[in-house]
Length: 381
Image (cartoon, rainbow, N blue to C red; front, side):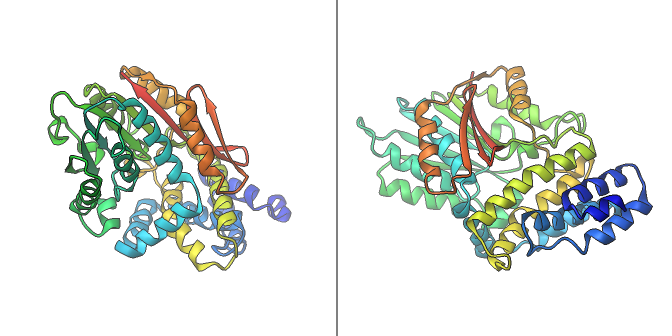
């Protein structure tokens, strides 16, 4: 009652998570009843986030977290409608552009002298990331190289596109032809857990660049089961002897931490995310912003809070942990150049001054109001 009397929503959410963790169902039910009157998808950032966190807490109590996560995925609109929501978030906040620009700049620096380039993208999505690469390679002084792109796909990306990888391949091939670049596209329709060398379309004497954009945290590791797909995939990529590997991930610790610390981490991280979305899309009753948050962020929140074990697919790690994993696989850190940071800084000129980019030990961090949110790092053999 003391906590409730202060009406501090963040404090009440944490207390509710703690009571659930301690199996104090009487108090948690009282808190949930009170919290339902305080949260709103049309409120301020903490009220909106808390609405989805509360949904995750209730699902956790009812042991229906995975069902709700799957339901959210199934209810997400497909094709053009979902793509429009993703495009709105892409334009409103710099998170995806940060990933594309920083990774592309690092890749171009690593393969600038290669005559036969093979990019393996483990989250090809719409293939938009590679449009600037194709355009840049077309302007090489000594002529364009042969460019091959292998797109690894999963069911969620195909669902968003409302079609298979042939859509991506056709679009990129058309652009490459207009730029007069020799180009081949190889589709690899499989999840990251199913990847093997025979499915990647490898050829001798290629300069290989591998891209991991916001995807490795979906791979289960040793904390989930004996099939450690996360480290297996990193070791498999090491065996390709790539010129460069780019990794873009959420700077958050939600993988192996116990429930209450994980809940607090999600609360802090997504508070910053929801604040940044509101800064770009003001108006509490904005249906457009509500749709973006529901379709692009809510299911991740529910997975982190409401699911456990193999059912939890959102398992983020901080860069320090990724360093350990890549180091054990035989990779060395490849510091991102001043030029890469400069590209990101120019990108942020078009956004809120609350965004910050910083370079730490060769990696780039993108943050909001002092909270690091995303990181880009590069790796070589």
